[in-house]
Image (tube, rainbow, N blue to C red; front, top):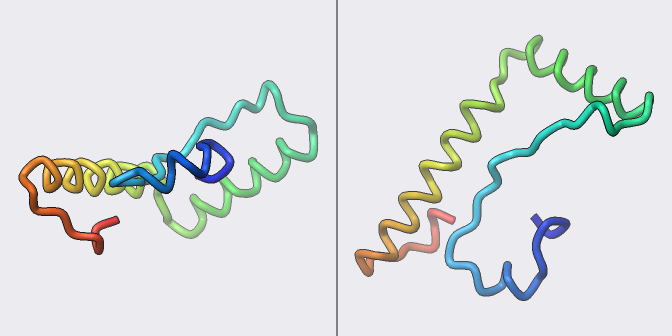
Length: 78
């Protein structure tokens, strides 16, 4: 997240979660495309799903925001 947002914003954020990103292979050089391909194959081989993890992160962030609105804020969710 440090590469995407200024430190000042991250320090003041009440909730933070990572939702992943987009692999723009059309903008990658050959080496980066090879690494991205190997990462995708390893993910499938290990049976891990990044999509499910990202959905869980969205739920966690939504819960944090809802708790803040209710005045029931807990640091351990972040």
